[in-house]
Image (cartoon, one colour):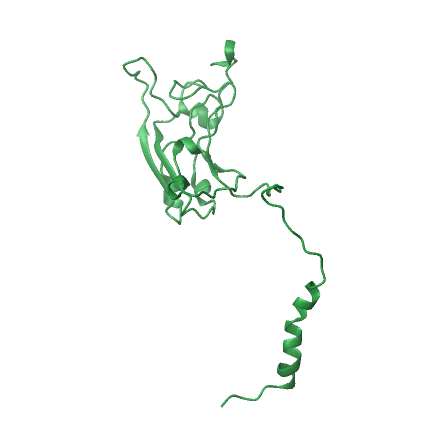
Length: 191
């Protein structure tokens, strides 16, 4: 048989429970005008991922797959490929990053991603960072699997679309240590 309730439990607890309701009942309602007025996010907000580039346009991703191993939601898929300094049949370079390897296939499934940031902590070259972009909703599930082309940072003025030879030093060590001299712009902005 249940023990009888005390006077405090019978009378004071229900009144105290409604205390929050009574305190907020007469406050002005704050309505966010979200789609029309977007507030800035905090500087360290974890939003959409971005694959960064070196100043000459080569990709920073070396295809090591550490980000995929660190992801607790198994949302990242990476396939590494080998860079080559041997020109192809058309005489074009086959180098996408300064190292021996590059991320040939890179996908992030935002249906699984929990935006925790463990992948960016695992990246040894700071190739993967997170932006402040938070609008990731879509009407189609397939569009929420971002491919490498969706994640790569845009080419800035003075950058050249890979593949091309290394422009910022003699070897990949110059890139990673930052001991390269920035190339002088040539006519037309191409380097």
